[in-house]
Length: 245
Image (tube, rainbow, N blue to C red; front, side, top):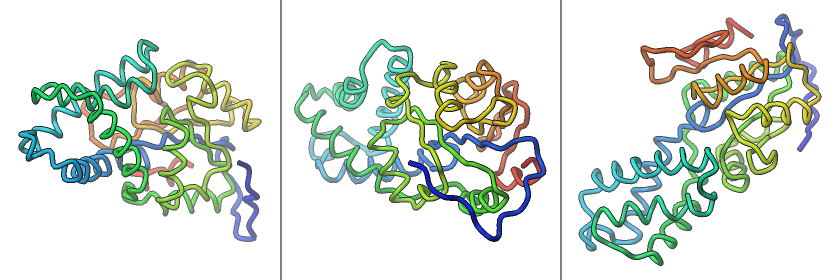
């Protein structure tokens, strides 16, 4: 989707960059907060406490454990996206001695229905996107998330209007940290490596992936990790982008 970003208030770009590529989850859209809220609704919807899946905190931690393992397997190509979606629920239920595949698939469908409706973003997200837009940058997204789900998140959280192109792993037939998704993004946006920069929270997927494609990077260190990846810049708050771009 391409939109006319021209505005009378556009300020001249003073940096060498023209194209800015953002990651979505954990960088702009607060995935952890939104997922926890969604899982809480899911827990109540399926009356999981009555099924001896309790307390909620244990259910939540168990889900996170399995989701992390399966996402890694998915990113390495060992399982399909469909397997990831329902098996993270199924493995969680198994840990509570519930071997119900039908229930797991119903939970998966409901979770993916609830999650994209959540609207929590990190502090200063809208302000920085407005700032970058007014400076005349072309702003895009590169995400490993599912196409339908990511677009729902963007539309429901009112973030969609800021992005010219949204590049997903499904559309590009590759995923971060593979350099092919970044090359696909550059081709899609008519961006040149030297004039493009990737902004994300994941040291491997966002930072190492973009570096392998020859791009400059900005590591968004929301968690204030002690060990930082090799990156052109590093920030702990989105407002700091104003001193870089």
